[in-house]
Image 1 (cartoon, rainbow, N blue to C red):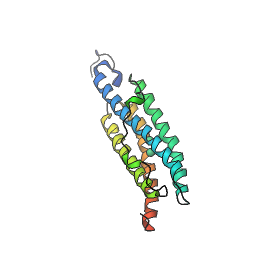
Image 2: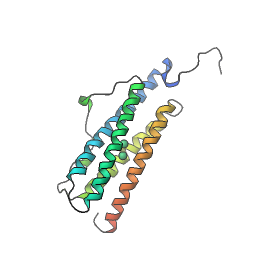
Image 3: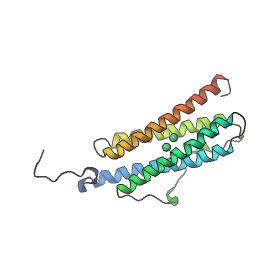
Image 4: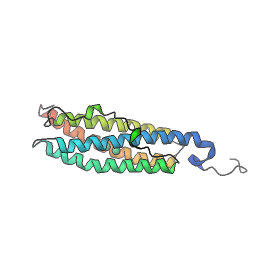
Length: 170
Ligand SMILES: [Fe+2]
Ligand SMILES: [Fe+2]
């Protein structure tokens, strides 16, 4: 270790500005994924019809708060890394699979869409965890927490899907 060198400021070090910018880009994508998930889950939590839909609607309504919390975390971290949280014009929808179904009783369509959205989030957040390793432990730590939440969401909806499959409804 060089004793003459200045102590490293990690991700905030001038020499690491490129890495910092890259982390901001990864976080910005994560932010948009959360925002779109809030939109999709909000719509589904209201649109679905039927006795069977109630559990799913309640679960989604709860998730909306969690996903919004994730968006807040990502936004704060973008700011801390000297990035700028984008405005609405930067948004581009990607969740074609989570558009309202033809029939609002089609709960399976929504369950599958949620699993797909959660899987996408898990993949992207796993990438952030990998790419921030040794580079930005604070972002990494935060994203590990969010990743844990998404794994829980996906597992819950996989359980819902299994029930429908077991009953021959999916
Ligand atoms: Fe989330
Ligand atoms: Fe989630």
